[in-house]
Length: 367
Image (cartoon, rainbow, N blue to C red; front, top):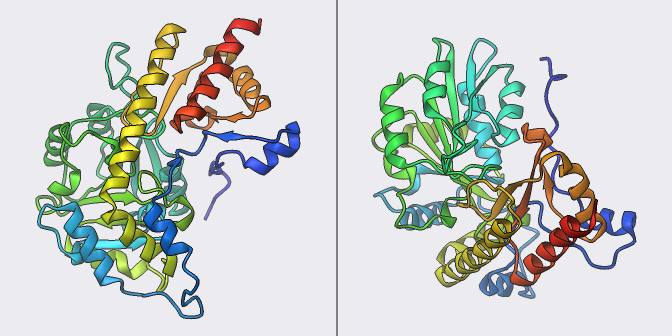
């Protein structure tokens, strides 16, 4: 298997490395789309004196799967759920199930890099669809379903759709996804990656999980790393038909999710107050940042996630380094073919005030 053309996934800068390189005491990390808050209920569990760490975790956490199905709704059962070491592992299961060297996968341009990596590891041909290029569109640089449909061939076996999308932060309506799936051959598997779904206003749209019983070729993935604040735990899940879930289980290691991840996920998904507060903070700082961008005449993309991708033009690299030297870590997007853009995670009010102060300093003082 040829892997030399695989682009390595590079996570956000490590705080300790930045501190050492620039001799800084305090760093604000706004590069990995982490929730700046932690559920007190999860913290209380972790801080318990005793945990059975000498024993293997539950290999078949049916209770957690049932809880997830109940919280998700749409008359799902635990048999529609599979847990993974982050939703990344579920994405990998789906790629292994769907792809081989004789198949093609369609990935929208500017998509999460993991889609390409796991597809190439299956030796599949990666076909990149065009983004929405209408400058006036709220979905600018987001997914263009018409372009995807035009790329379909008899060899197409898998299509990735992130909704809301990373790194563009854009969103497409569920009715459009429904019509799209209905229009393509049922032999093509569809992944709707909803890692950021919980940041949407529930009045805007339903989850693609509502379509799982309608389409046997649909897989929906979710994460506990974002609004639930469990990024270090590495736990996520997939939703699909019972038959599809049974197929995915063939690729699952017996103990792929650990004790703390399972217990913390069960606590977090029931901590509705924490989710509401996290969402509220996200909305407040999102408005704060977008207002500042308007004042500075900075163009930005969709705002449906816990980050905002903004245009810095030819000075993108210069601005990134300036922020870094001043203790603010954001994400450059050259790997996503968005060389003129940077992505900033929406943190606390204090963190965003520091980010905006440093940003304004750059544009006011750096010539």
